[in-house]
Amino acid sequence: MRTREKSFRHESLQDGKSIRDLLRSITKGLADGHLVFSDEDGEIVMEPKGLLHTKLTVSKEDSRNRINLRITWQAEDSSVKRNKSLSVRAGKKKTGRR
Image (tube, rainbow, N blue to C red; front, side, top):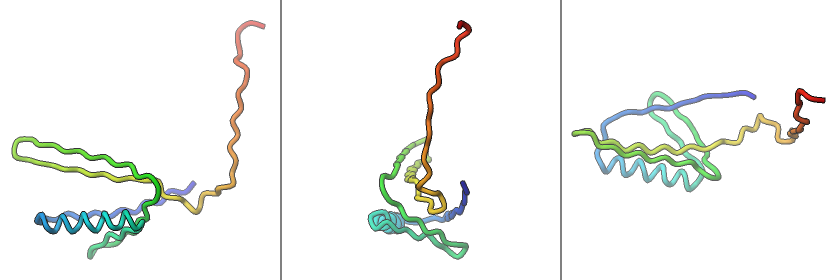
């Protein structure tokens, strides 16, 4: 099995309206099954399908507030052969007695 990794990271200061617009774009991309993230340093395309694992974490410590939203899913890998069969066998438990 081959593993390919490509990542995209963007960090900046945004106002509430800009973040709302960003979340709307992500929401539309999730609904359409096609997301493109890009900036001057690169681009990554994702195609979310099926069930998506969602994790929401919110914390408030002194004056620091944080909202983390993580959405993950397994992408179909076209390089994996789908016609491979799985074989599982159960054997008799070996004991010290005969």
